[in-house]
Every structure is written in C-alpha cells, then in structure tokens.
Amino acid sequence: MPDVIARILDQRGVGPDSADGYLNPTLKETFPDPSSFQDMEKAAGLMLDAILDGRDVTVFADYDVDGGTSSALLARYFRAWGRELGLYVPDRLTEGYGPSPEAFRHLKKSGAELVITVDCGAAATSALDAARDIDLPVIVIDHHLMGAQLPHTAALVNPNRPDDTSGYGHLAAAGVVFVMLVAMNAEARRRNVAPPEGLPDVLQWLDLCALGTLCDMSPLRDANRAFVRQGLRIMTRSGNPGLRALADVAGIGVMDSVYHATFVLGPRLNAGGRIGDPWLAAKLLATDDRQEALELAERLHGLNDERKAVEAHILEIATTEAERQLEANPERGVLIVSGEGWHPGVIGIVAGRIKDRFHLPTIVIGWGDDLGPVAKGSARSVRGVNIGGAISQAASEGIILSGGGHAMAGGLSVAPDRIAALDAWMCEHMAAFKSEREEAKRLEVDGILSPSAASIELCDMLDKLGPFGQGAPQPVFAMKDIKVIAPRRIGQNHLKFQASDGGTTIECLAWRFADTPLGDAAFAGGNLSLVGRLKADEWNGRRRVQFEVLDAAVTDAN
Image (cartoon, rainbow, N blue to C red; front, side, top):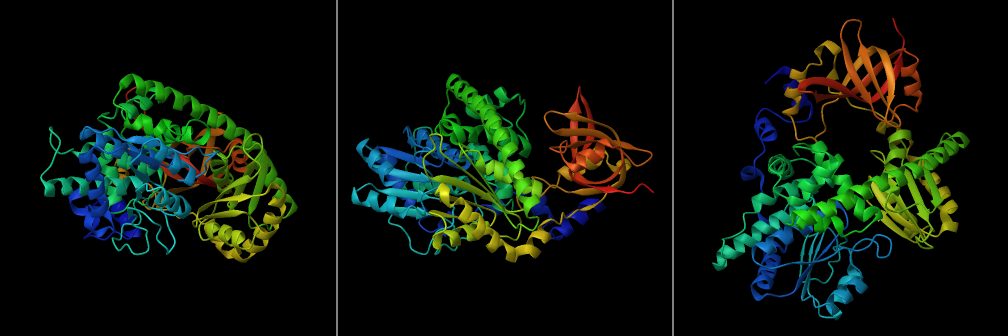
C-alpha cells in the first residue's frame, strides 16, 4: 500500500492481515449470526405468526433517525407480505422518551394486538408492566444499556441486555432490526412460507440501516462498516422515495457520502422530532408514494430551517452566559446554562456546540413557555469525563428529579428553582476530573502536511480508508507555520482563506471560526499552525482539494 495509507492503518491498530477486511468490508464476512442474540429467533417467530394470522401490529418508534429508519425497515418488510404496519411515535414535549403506560393503553383501545418497540423500550419497566396488565404483547428491539432486571415482554432483543453474549452491542437499533429481518426470512424458509412474490430482498433496504447507523454515531467496525459501505451504494440508486424527495428539497443530486447522510439528510429527518411532528421521519422513510414523500420532505425541510433559527438564538444567549461563568470562575469544570422557553428539542445541539467551543462538559436546561413546569436538561461531555454517571449520581442524591445517560451524553429533569443547587453540586463533582479535562483537549494528528503535498490524488487515496465516522475518524493533518492570505467571512460566522508556505497555497475552510480569537488572528494576517482534514471540492466540472480546519494556533513567523 502507499506509505501514507499504511502508516494511518498502523496507527489505528489495523495490521497487514486485517487491512483488506477493513478497507473492503463485506456482509458475508461480518454479518452477525441472528441466533447469537437473545430472543432474536423467538421474536422473529412471533412477528411471522402475526403476519400470517393477519393480526393488527403497531411499531412504537423513537423520534430520532435511528428510530425512524428502524420503523421504516419493519414497515417495508410487513408490506412485502401484504400487511400494513401501524405506527406510533411519542411527542418529545408531552410524552418524553420511550413508551408509557398511557401510550400502551391507547394502542390497546385502538385495536393493536401486538406492539413492537424499536430504539426504545428496554428500560420502560412500568410501561411494559402496564402492557402485561392489559394483555397487550410487546416485542422490544433496542440497543440501549439497561439494568440487570429484565422487564416483562413477549420478547426482548437487545445486544446490550445483560445476558446477551452476541458481542454486537455497538449496533444501532437499525442494525439490530436489519438482523431481525434476516432472522424472519430464515424462519419463513424453515416453515416453507413466503408471499406470492417470494421472500423480501432485505438488501434493498440496507440504505436505511446505514442511515440509522451513521446518524446514531455507532462505531464503524465489523458489521457496521459493511452496513454503511454497502448501504451508501444502495442509497445512490435513490430507490427509497422518501430519501430521494428529501435529497431533492435539500439540493442533493446523488446521495453517495457519509456527509450527505449525517449532515444533510439526518438533521432534516430529526427536525420533526425536535420541534414539530415526531411522526414525519418514520412516515417519509416508509412511504412509496412520490407525492406524499415530497409533501413530507418539504415539511421536514421547513422544520429544519426553523430548528436552526431557534438553535442559533439559544446558542448566542447560552454562549454569552458560559463566557460570564468562566470569567467569574476560570477553574469551573462544567458549564451549566439555562433559560426559560429554551426548546428541549434543540438544547442537546446547543450543549454540543458549547462543549466544543470551551472544551468542558456542558449542560443546557430549558423550561416554561408551554414546555411544562419541570425543566429539561441535555448534557454533552468531553472524553474521559462521564457526564451520564454524574447525572445519575445527582438524581440518586436528590439534587435533580431524574436523569442519566452514558459517558458522553445525558439528560435530566429538574425543578427550575433547583438549577443553582445542581450547578453547585456539579462544580464540586467535576473538580476531581481536572487532568481528564486537560487530556481531552489533545487533538491527535495522523501526520504533518505541506500545502504542496495536499493534492487531489492524496485526497482520493485517503478516501479509500472510508467510510469515516464514530470509531473510524477521517485522517487529520497538521500544517505548520502557514501564512494566512485573503481571509473573508462566509455565511454567518465561517471563514475562507488561502494558506501559504511561501510557495504553494491551498484554500482553507474554517467553520464557526469568524467570531473567535483564532478568527481574529486570521484576519490580522499572521502565521498560524492548522489542524484539519483534506476535502475534495468540485465546481464547474473541476476538482480541487480544500483543507477543512478543525483547530489552529498562532505561531511566530521566523
């Protein structure tokens, strides 16, 4: 292999024997054995029984992309058998996350004879107890962490349930559902049954699996790499009317990249669950009607614009408050900002933005303004600081009403008049993680790069290391002592400039840099050392390479 590729693979722990599998992942080599999942075969049998018996089945989906893709996978599979699957998606504001006793009672009264939860349900003990009490069978397909006590279900498929030994706890819910579809086909073959057109070809829906995997930030290793690599190829065919319509309204021609999935399609699909109708994404991904797809896509596109405006307003206020807190106490180990009327659908995004800017664990809290009297908070953390654990401890000590999460993210509920107490408690708790916070500021680079070496050929070579995502980051390079030429602001707060080493120049893009000290340094025309990624750009049929800046430091010109 070329030296640069070999070095990057080696730095990521990929040896010569495993390099081909990493670069060319296949479903044949990586696909999980469905029987290795607890309850997978049991659940497949129960769902096939429901299909053959013509029972009324409803899928209960989470309101994010992983939930929407998971529900659409099941809806398309049932439709291939001539059965329409009912849909229920909870409202973020009025119902919160996951199933509730009220939702199950509603579904029972509506005639549901079987409910399948996707991307939720594994920890909904009270709701599942209520379903049992009203004789409503529930199959749970989830991937979230859960406690040692298993809830009452007809079947529970979750590679992260405590007694599951499949080793696939890194799958997104869409990945688990896709494996389930394969298990259902296997069960149908065992029974020698099939719809008139033959058993469904589940590979045609791998684009949905890839989309859910990418948008849920699942680690791109083994099966997940194959799901994404093969799924993106299927996505380019535009076989899903909903995705095609969403791409059309977003101005995308060919959907062929991780960027399209995670930064163009994903936010629009999430917009309904954040600030609008939580059912929109699941409906869009499941429909085969082009006109309906266009109408749903337009609504999601509009909601995404609305979401960005709401987010920008809250982010401006929250950033000012974070700066004030750090001026008052530069040693703070956590930032907690709050505001009345801050929409819970965007506070997680805002928390991530502030975390990235200040390199500190961040909690953003909103309440009131028709959002309810209880404040909702969303947290994002830096590497090495377990924010979910801190929130769970705060809940157990009565500082907040409830909350939890995982190492990098969490959520909570708190009375507005207890936010100050939460702030004091968190500051004291996070004081013990100073070394971890400092270590999290380290940005690993894959090599030193000069502008003259940043060719489109190198960019194409690096692309062969993809797909890139969680656990498989795009290569990062440093350019040292670069002269900034002709900086200009683009958009609201982004920068574009030329970087020169005295001979060759390369165009650079720096997102959200304009209103920062580094942006000021760029406009001052001094020398910077840059860290970023190579990106191929095409304009009027001409391809060129750009450098996408992740971070920078002011250096002395010598």
